Image 1 (cartoon, rainbow, N blue to C red):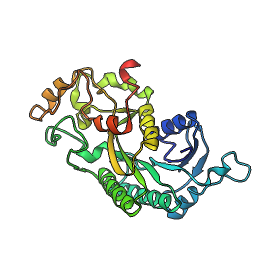
Image 2: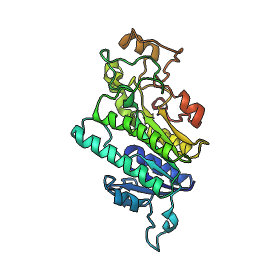
Image 3: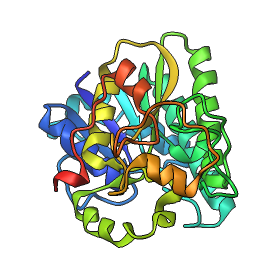
Image 4: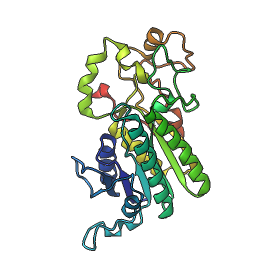
Length: 291
């Protein structure tokens, strides 16, 4: 598992994933519309809504003199590219882009012989944005929580998970691992955390969750190697919240009527990562509290 195509490698999560894989000795190709500001690997400009371009990208050789010329058969695809959040573009544009790019990447990967696809689903499939009028069914929220997409963006991720299940069924030897990423943060973003400590309502929308981009990269890398065949999905968040106030107090203040299904540590995440820990061996290493 050495040759990896990363779609969306120029984005916040993608940059961390590409850097981590390169540092671990992988051959990586960043497939995106714009080059990365952190160019640690070759870049190939591809419109993922164009199936022909996606097929070409997954058979990329880089020219006879390119050091990655043997890259033509990737061992895995990491699909991170998407319009990254609701309300950035019109709903139909977001839905069409995310659905078609995901279908094209999944289909092209399987047709070119790739057996492992790791891809970015989203915490938003679980009902975000949460509020007192739209609370979670229980907490900590885990993978059994009802799927409640509230936007074209989250609907595209929900349907992406169903797409992965069905395409894996058509290709029984394949593996699809969907990572329901929480709000991705880089170290520079931690300067903003002080601004919402006095108002928990500012971050109630995702139960005060986040994922450090470097831990996102860890989750991707471990998903590439976990001994698993099939289609499954995992919540990927940091082990703590973005708040200084204890998690139990946050829930009592903002969501007092919601069932708490486990005893909460002081700042324990309310987006459960127990399944990712057990199956993937994921364990967050970077916290804003250490910066």
